[in-house]
Length: 126
Image: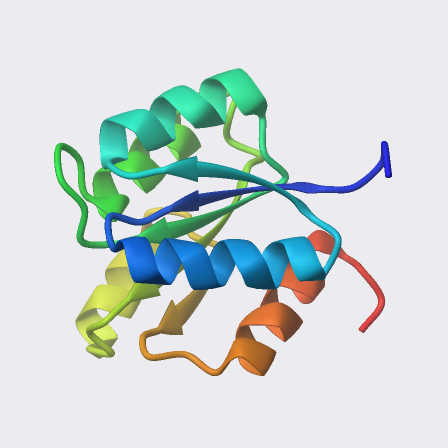
């Protein structure tokens, strides 16, 4: 599957990374992992993922900071970002979307909802 889309999973919780990685690989996506905000930025630059599943609360740089830096960089600005947060507060969602995130999913998430959202963002047929 040379044309399979690449998804970067940026989250510092190993159990979430494992389940997301399993889920995305099962859907046929290539998966890259980052465990903190700085690594996420490095991987976005080096791997040019089609989509980033970006946790808000991470060490070194928050998901908000990563999102802001990606969207401020013309070379990276087209990167699609799906923010993941344990806090379903409207203010956090608004902040993420204002910074350029394409979508938002709150933890704990339904795997079906997440897969549907990923497919929608990548323009794949449902």
